[in-house]
Length: 190
Image 1 (cartoon, rainbow, N blue to C red):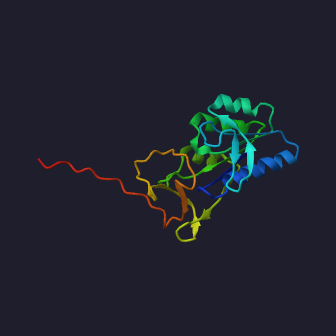
Image 2 (image 1 turned 60 degrees about the vertical axis):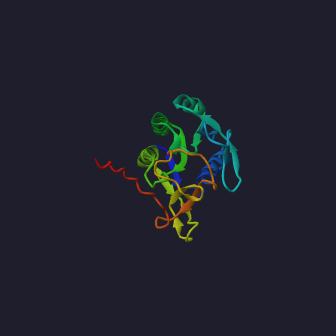
Image 3 (image 1 turned 120 degrees about the horizontal axis):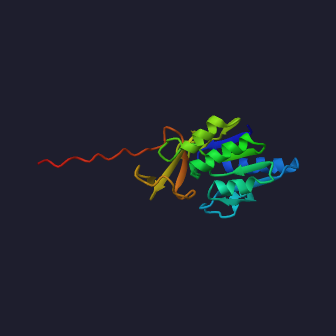
């Protein structure tokens, strides 16, 4: 199996590392393709925070993955946390064939819970690189992505998927990451 996973919080350099790996494969003469979920904001591109860009195909389902991999030696996929289980299974199957698969994505959601598809890929991967960022609060090692609403931690009832960058997310360490408590509903007194 040749499945390599790059994971970590927002602003840790996952996309940059994926683009670097794909460029290195091209330099070795390998046939390379890149993709990302079809609903991502930078349509048609992998874009790192450092400004490095690479063309990418939209990936809506497993049929898109099969078409993308045809005739390729290496397939790279960004934002894998947003992919449906069938596409994640397709990536694993692709890696079991003769295609080298490079994937990047968040390991944890904004509440600090593992993304199921990324956890599955980590369990199947030949290598896992976990990147970190710098906590915007204290400067420590950030392993979490804090979602913000009006500058405050997002409620736990917020949607799991919300696309955005620095206006919606901050890298934080475990100590500075805030997970709002679930609100308790009290039964009215009769």
